[in-house]
Length: 151
Image 1: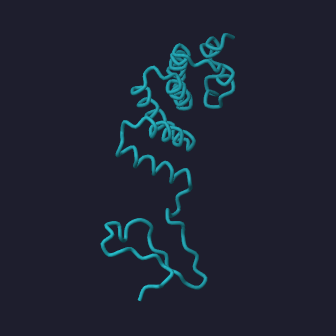
Image 2: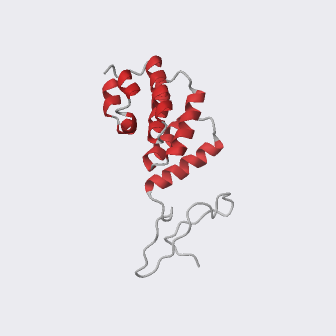
């Protein structure tokens, strides 16, 4: 007989049995989180990767996922996603700026500076942020970067 305090699915429910694994209740047992051992960032990345697989051209999903993988330190994946964004939004200065940040973090200094230059031409104008953005640390003393800042 089913326990009364556990939610039950209706027999005609197409999602019956889907979703979270059932937790067993017992004295002294602690239920594991339904998403297993993933941390929140890993869970979010996994979630948005799955959404992206269903909507590969979604600008919103690409932006969020690029930010998440960048935060996780997955620089190659961040570059790939940011390139896809720039392909879809060629005149978006923020997409270009974010690609430049990913390229700088990936050690691709020349392309990062070229991409920053294009972002500025498209309208990016927060030079104070550029000077302090930790994503641009690897190119901070590069002569071409300093020239972009007017130094």
